[in-house]
Amino acid sequence: MRLSSQAAIPETIIRPLYDRAAQKCGIVHFGIGAFHRAHQAAYTDDAMNAGDRDWAITGVSLRSAGVADQMNPQDGLYTLSERSGEQTSVRLIGAVKQVLVASQQREEVLAAIASSDTKIISFTITEKGYCRAPDGSLDFALAGLGSVYDYLYAGLARRMASGRDGLTLLSCDNLADNGAQLARLLAAHLQARDPALAEWVQARCKCPATMVDRIVPATTDADRDGLEKLAGLRDEAAVLTEPFTQWVIEDSFAGPRPRWEIGGAQFTADVRPFETAKLRMLNGAHSALAYLGLARGHTYVHQAIADPALLPLIERLMRTEAATSLTPAPGQDLAAYAASLATRFGNTALNHKLRQIAMDGSQKIPQRWLETLAFHQREGRQCPAILAAISAWVGFVGKEGLKLDDPLAEVLHRLWQAEGASGMPLALFGDRGLFAQHWVATKADLDLICATIGQPA
Ligand code: CS2
Image (cartoon, rainbow, N blue to C red; front, side):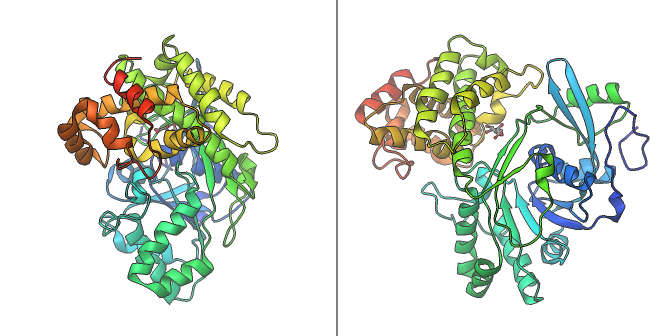
């Protein structure tokens, strides 16, 4: 039987304790993929279970109708399974009320942004959803019709015109300083279209920074079949994740918010130490595992981290290169963090595909690797583990060619054709390279990258 509010739910599944139908939507969320459903939606469900009201979520997919087709026939319900070893615990999440497909339901999306019930607009639109040029500025060509900025522009204009309050714009993506970046990029877009609206947003809205952390592999048909056997329910929107979850949020909201701390979220004045540690250590190691692991013939993260040729390199990347580039917050133990990451990567129950992480490398590399490289370069040090990872990425770019899953696939392919493997490192990381804004390699760095392109570590 298909999951829905009418379906009989087995006793073993934990259920929402609140009247779902009675909840108003206080949150509009752009990018309602598996990550949001395993993370922010679960915290929101926790808050409503504890008595908070009217924080239901209107999910928005910018283009694809896939998630709407999975969730709307289920009245927004889905199961969240936490997996570790042989253990699985399954919980039903009721926080999502509906999913809109922006490209087909523009009017509904704008009405949701402008609604007086909406207090928070949140985002997991991935790095590329922010439409940044390689130098970090807003790419106006990408940020046109169909981009998140276009919906925000039209929805917020309607909100301003009807005299409503401002709201909180909450980025939950893996960008350094994600709140400030969202504020800056949105301001650039609005400034060009409607300076008065740009000013209204600046005065009435807040963009807190967040650090979000939970490993969420894409759900497969085998996962859905397994769940159906276990629970006797067909859940097309099922999400699987690890037991670990963390959310650190800058305590700077324009209006009310759910008590996400009930689910363990931490509110703080400065998210940066947590965010940079997570980006450089977890995500930096993840991307290294992805490109080096694929080059060595692995499919999953747990296989790559168990490879004796990779483990010491990943340990070095996390502990010697990334951790030493950070200034920890009081009480933040980076050595313990590195140890916990190695254990999380080793979770064999997750089947987290390296290819999922390998996607969109051009958008991820600056905050995951290049900031660390730039830090150590200023101190006169080289980072051999990150350079090995870069070399593996360059090799991956060459091998994938136009099949590369990356918004810069065409640019990278053209560069590869013009420069070949030996010229690619300079074209990317030289002083006039594509990433020069973030980090410029020394001759010794370039030699090291060149020496290993296309070779498994
Ligand atoms: C991963 C992240 O796909 C990727 O690039 O590195 O999605 C990672 O799993 C999460 O950030 C963990 O919190």
